[in-house]
Length: 82
Image (cartoon, rainbow, N blue to C red; front, side, top):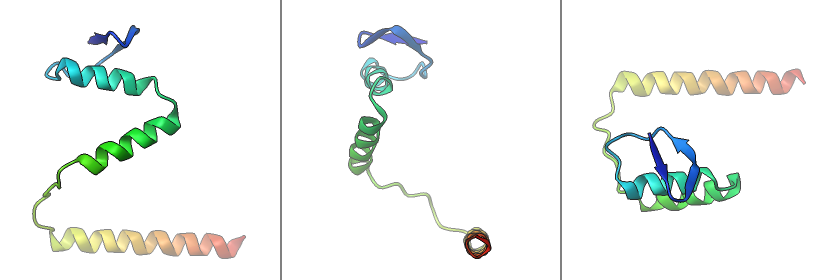
């Protein structure tokens, strides 16, 4: 576990291979109000490099489409039932 100067009374279970700078950022993040946490996450995500998850498997895409279609059908059914 790592404590940080920004939140000395709080103890956060961060990965042991994280740098002090990273644990300090995470500790500061933990004490932010929810609205600022969202702003911070948005800013970090805009700075992330693109991620290549590899080629998409046709079966995976088909299952995702089926799941989405089922979800939309359920939402439509619930909307009509109201």
